[in-house]
Image 1 (cartoon, helix red, strand yellow):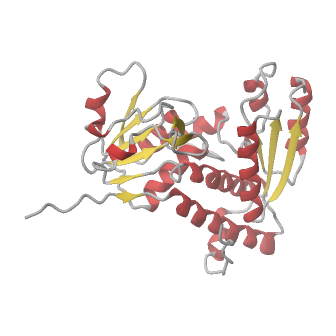
Image 2 (cartoon, rainbow, N blue to C red):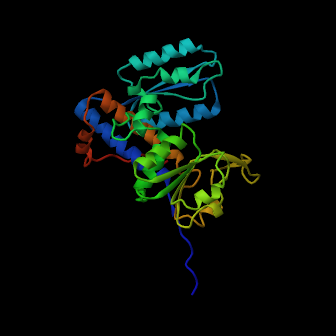
Length: 318
């Protein structure tokens, strides 16, 4: 008898992100009508990097879709650190702003840590302040006011696709402060047994072959091969890398940190690149903004439950 063809679950980050944005739009409408509060997101862009400008444009569009108040500060790359600190202070003092995002990287003459540290924790929409990260990893303490967006997006995909986490073996490839370390903490808080692998890890393959859940966030194109994946494992690919491709008009195509063509033959569920984790990052940024608006206006988050049955008009087809 011929063996059935392997059909993994393709985790659709684009569709899931749209659902999350619709939920945020509904909650925003509720906040406006019942509490006269409009969540406000401020973005600060320094210089004219094309990639940074593109990210900010996407964030601005998403904020407009869900009905947020949006403020943009586009500054010349000649701005001094002192002047940039003043801009951040002005946004921090603005009661209509609930989340402040400074787009990185900043020009070399500006200390990124100094600028990011100047953002008050109650407006830290990226969730990277020492207090938010500390609360994220502490058991039994206060919840963070905001969570790192990309790691949170990974967890949200697992939850919405009903992929078991508790009691599972999870391997995170990469230990960056932006993705690897926070996502490991989140997985552990959900009772996964977590292994973090990095550039000094010996025999990476042996670790991955034991993993029920793999989160690849190493920043190297197609680094994780199919023969490293356990049959039936869930693969969350955070990477986004360009790979030369003469058949494409741009001369390259986007690939993840996982060799998708190989891994899809083994995985039980897998995120594509693009269209997997990427769209979730902006969706969770909006969710952080909403939560900060609730916190800064002393509104109980459970109040949003009352909006569950209210109708929300869908976004126009894109």
